[in-house]
Length: 68
Image (tube, rainbow, N blue to C red; front, side, top):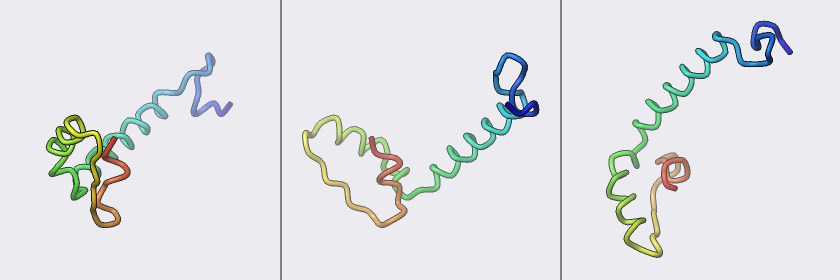
């Protein structure tokens, strides 16, 4: 184990936790820029109400990463 990344108990260091948190926050912010984000609530409602739903969108619109 790398001493800079893990403490003596094998737990992630504070620096590693901080970097992971920053990366997660950036990912969350980036997801909000995807075109599908605007339709998130209406899509989730439609998914809940319908047994089959076809979602069409351009490559990179967020279909795969945003829709459950």
